[in-house]
Image (cartoon, rainbow, N blue to C red; front, side, top):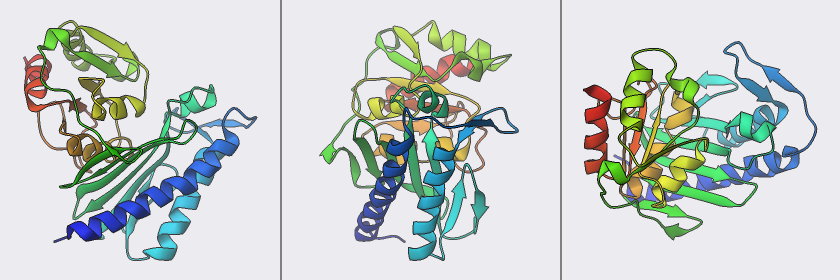
Length: 261
């Protein structure tokens, strides 16, 4: 069992890791660099790789027994009790095109459960930090998600329509989108931070990897929201990549009806 004091100390480590990556990303933001296309057709830059390498170096130095799962350099010691899950730039397309809505995602799993999460936007200096059982903050101040509104009054975000190309996801997403007040695209991980801060009701996405969603769970749930897959199950390393983040249980339940009807 992990004590709250231990989680607070480890959360300070997570923030320090975000400081390390942020200094690197600011150096490359809106600068000239090459863009490579990986095997899965997603882009990667020297900024992604250098930022993740710096985080890994710090973890290996201070916590050599901890596991690491990173987008750019893969996984080591995945069966460790403590595993860091890293995405140095969530929203590389935004980073490449000079839009400051990308973020660094850092999660710490304890026995497979996300206990600490960081969403860090280093260019505009915004950071959400969530600690399981303690709460979530935005730049050091406590945050809370929105209270329940009818689904017809809800604002929903998704990163891009291509996440839902082809049945059945396209049909399910379209059904839910038609039920909310407004659906907006773009935002990457930043939209989840806005949900934690009480500005957004829903974020619905698909084709996500663990490094895309693990850090989001403590941030949103620490603010009073809930994160699950499209069937309502909690997210884990083995989840299928469908993500539903909601400001409250009632909004989640209504959204699930549209995703599963």
